[in-house]
Length: 59
Image 1 (cartoon, rainbow, N blue to C red):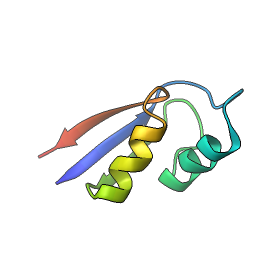
Image 2 (tube, helix red, strand yellow):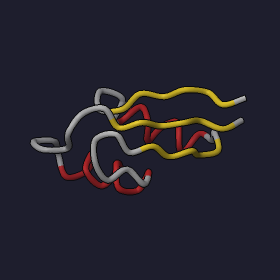
Image 3 (cartoon, rainbow, N blue to C red):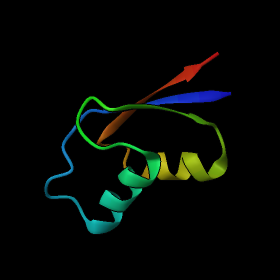
């Protein structure tokens, strides 16, 4: 199963670890969209920055 991740809010003012998590997911700026395979690691990264991103399942 794949997950579509969309960055909704800016990374200005967030902690360095959250900024690193966004870049590790491949998100660079507001409106960026990436598709990732659902795994425990990716889901943990999404949970860490869930206030900045939105997700959708791709069937």
